Image (cartoon, each protein chain N blue to C red):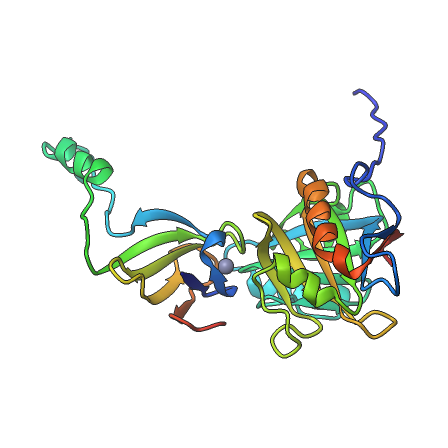
Length: 209
Length: 104
Ligand SMILES: [Zn+2]
């Protein structure tokens, strides 16, 4: 068997430029970050196995998987709703194959598929983050309907994304994460940067912690 | 037009694609004993090509491809676009139903 050595490259290698974008004066209203070094596995409960999948997740991460659009933070993993009876398991750190440990956890109750290299993770926060996202998303992000922990499988700029609101940023502003197919990441990044430009953008790249 | 997905809540039309009439049922090409049905050709022609042009309430299949990727059965008035009910199509995850306008 041939030996492969994969070169890890950012899906945003063409679009990403670190530092200030758009409005140059005052504090940046938006922090736009590519989050790297994560593992992402799609978990789909097999027919009649939803309860067993929930039990296995609870044992592994101390939380039940979301039954409605939500992102649940567990021990060492975030479980993000992607559809009925299915969710993502997002963990920090990039590993060659994240599936085998999950196969042990779920023991055949779920179908698993590695999406780590298939998705790009982008995080937006800042004082103007909701104004910028409102231009491109039709989901209502108001605190009362999209609080911390809320999630949505939706489309932004005709591109399917998994969007969720994580814990607020250190400065107290809301923080939204989104996962997008890597081949659409460049395009979506430009869309988000354009929407945020009038508020001033600080672009960074940081590993998932 | 907005569709209240039973899984995602209310979303804009752009997240959905339209398949069409949910009413046609695939006919049987063969009888239970394996004999070919003499009228099968006509039944299949009807099933594949012929559609009612409903003015009023119609049950339709829609796909939430821009969201949770579930197939839905939608009851829509074709003259007013009023949506009276949305529920998960058979086999789309857990069976769920929402009234039009419901958000969860
Ligand atoms: Zn949906």
